[in-house]
Amino acid sequence: MAETIAHASREELRELQSTRLRDTVERAYENVSFYRDRLGEAGVSPADIETIDDVQILPFTTKEDFRDEYPDGLFAVHRSELRRIHASSGTTGNPKIVGYTESDLDLWDEVMARSMSAAGIDATDTVQNAYGYGLFTGGLGFHGGAEALGATVVPTGSGNTQRQVELARDLGSDAIACTPSYALYFAETAEEMGVDPRALSIRAVLYGAEPCTEPMREEIEERLGAIGIENYGLSELIGPGVAAECREAQDGMHIWEDHFYPEVVDPATGEPLPEGEEGELVLTSLTKEAVPVLRYRTGDLTTLTSEECECGRTTVRMDSVTGRADDLLIVRGVNLYPSQIEAVVLEFDDVAPQYRIDLHREGNLDHFELTVELVEGFDGDVDRLREAVLKRVQNALSFTPDELDLVEYGTIERTEVGKVKRVYDRR
Ligand code: DLL
Image 1 (cartoon, protein in one colour):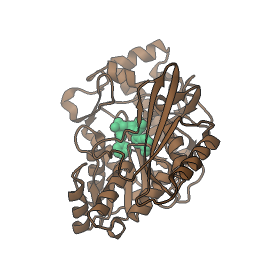
Image 2 (cartoon, protein in one colour; image 1 turned 90 degrees about the horizontal axis):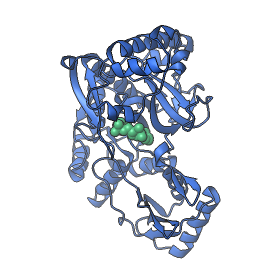
Image 3 (cartoon, protein in one colour; image 1 turned 180 degrees about the horizontal axis):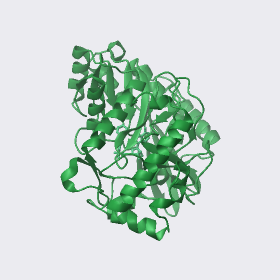
Image 4 (cartoon, protein in one colour; image 1 turned 180 degrees about the vertical axis):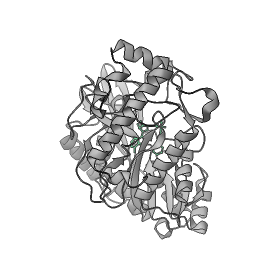
């Protein structure tokens, strides 16, 4: 089932999704007073759900709902049925708490094993898992998937990077699972230690948990001499394992739609958008027991496609996340996502993949400062490069930073543990 369903006909999948949606809505209504009230307010009863298309009559669930229902208001099972709890901290307010029953943990292993198998990992491989272990879902999510596949896991967790380089070298790790920023940090650390990261046996980087543009992926692949495979997920739905790229195409992440039903909506109005248009990803869990989630507004901006993939999987794919609706920077009236800046700046060969954006106010005006690193050993004309980068940003984004600092390689602080922070908005 695990691998065949990703190749099922669309009709077969729809049938399965429809049955599972009916069950999920029923279960949420029966066991979670929050959902009973929400559905009641929306005038929807579980009996109104016939096919998967009826998902659109359901009310949305938001991250504020998770925070308001802290700690266990969204649980649909008795606490004694839980096997594990994770939490996603975010920067403000209560953490979002998620629980897993035994069957949820099995489901998680299954979707993670599928994701890793799509990346070309099998039972003969050694996977170095450099995602953080703990309340964050990255570590244990990849751990469970690798074990379910029969692969060997090296549970390094995040940090301790020199040690990780030695382990990768001495154990011959075939893959590393980590954030994209950590993949680069790992490569840099290896270089500093005199270990050529390209000569390590790592052939795949299973990256995720942070936005990563195409030029950033190329940089990771080049530095590590490995293919970069993107993974997407969020704690509220399960953790990693919602969607993953295949190594054949590396062209959008296959959403494991038999468990997570995707829609894309207009972030302002909540109206569903036609396939191919960019908007906010909304996900509904179809099989989860402990915390069923109806139409969760992820805040992540992406595009869906159901075009055939060269790997033969039939699931809908999502594009890399361009940003979060709440990452949008409005600078002097211009709308910008940090990923747009990243994509433009990294087109330059003389620029290293490290940057930060600082925003503050001068009088009534926004002041936008972009700091970008030069590649190691750069000995060209910095002023000329600055002009060229500014011109390119201006042409591509109709926006000119007030300041562009090109700094020496290694100057911008690296993130060794957790998710990278590149924007410092002090307005
Ligand atoms: O980051 C789960 C995960 C772990 C995914 C490891 C992939 C690999 P949270 O900490 O709950 O869970 O954060 C979820 O991270 O809503 C996105 O904004 C962001 N995110 C996750 N994957 C990607 C990605 C994990 N591939 C939030 N690209 C999500 C961009 C991502 N953003």
